Length: 631
Image (cartoon, rainbow, N blue to C red; front, side, top):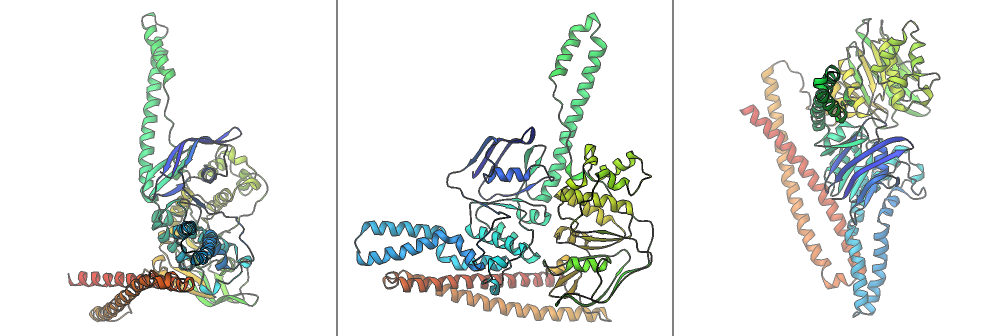
């Protein structure tokens, strides 16, 4: 057991945030922490990272266990370059290596000194424990995986963007390899390829992982347990997020059944007391029932976070078929071209996702499409009958109360109608009287969706609609957008939403717009469309010929890579023998040279193995397709 929580509790004044939390973290755990915004997830993380120490109950960390926390606002040394900042993760190792050189020189002068031999062994243990001789190999591996191309390694930390700084902090944390990784929204600011690399890295990570995330794809691909923070407590479920949902549903059904049974029993006891307490012959029995009623604890009804919102996007006016028309559209900001001339038509009822790395101009393109910004060239036109609604990435904090935001626009509504509508978007009770300027990002987003539902648009322009939303609200929004029969154009990095919408994706990068038919096609997993031909038989014949050619290429590639792996393996054995020989071991410069060669050799082995693994996997897919065709 790495971490133990026993009846843990945390209060802020009279407000109880966590109460009687009991849970454990075991070696190898991949735990996803989920819950509504404000449920206590951040409070739990701050206890685990020892930022909060004034809590009730027990928080125990096993002896020698190290924690690594992704600090969102940590400030690295701005004078260092990217590679130098990564090397600071090995500060203790570098110091030990420097001391080893001094000790080795003294050992050469005093060959029989036991004290020097002992000190050398201690320093060697420090280096080995941190895999110090593979330091540069590991730095290169993590930097590459986190999206830092080699030409950026000499870039000064002080000029990095916010997203680059987040990726660098995460890369450095992964390099330290703590026993327990604690990550808060780690996929923010990551592009798709880096997200997938991070998921693969965390799945193979030797320690335990605790992660707060609203990214369903991430929770499904990485996590083996889910901690649900709700009702001031933490409930553990086995499996990933998709496995958690039916377990949660079954647990809620059981709790509801017990609640109903307790309420029915209480009503039955109360009825008996009311009818028999005043009758002399049954007074004692009625008093006994009353005592039983007083001791009865009624199970609390479950609060289902997944169904708190209930709304649909609907419209009244049917527009023309060609609804969003782009013709030679060009976007420039200063000397920078965000979009080269591009033409496209979004038809009535279609969906289009706009995606791409941070800073490529996705939001700018959306502003051009929805009319907030003029294009640099070409044109954008909305078809006749278009009634658009717009959701911007950063909602403005208007004055007034939540209820006024709706009532001012729809003064004919009664208070009951306004409050009922807001309740469907999660604003209940006194929440409707909160000042808008005090709302969180998620609350502002929900309030804007409450407005959009009443606007009844047949065209939705949405810019990062799932930002600031907890995972349950994201689920509800995803279902509402999937059910929407109007036209949808949205910017998003939410992979689950993209996949569920199953629509074309316009990917922006370096001023170019490339259209992919689906999320799988964007990630390189889609099957290429065969060229149209007149005869079906000819199409099958052409496809089979191309398949056989590709299979032959793969066989040759796999054989070549296997031969290269054998050669690298043989050289690794030779190198180990050379390093262990007295001639090399007693020569620090030669030893360092051989060690560096070993680092590069192992790094190259990893690259060759990755290429071999990909080729073998593709080969299996072709063979399976051939067997299916033959069968």
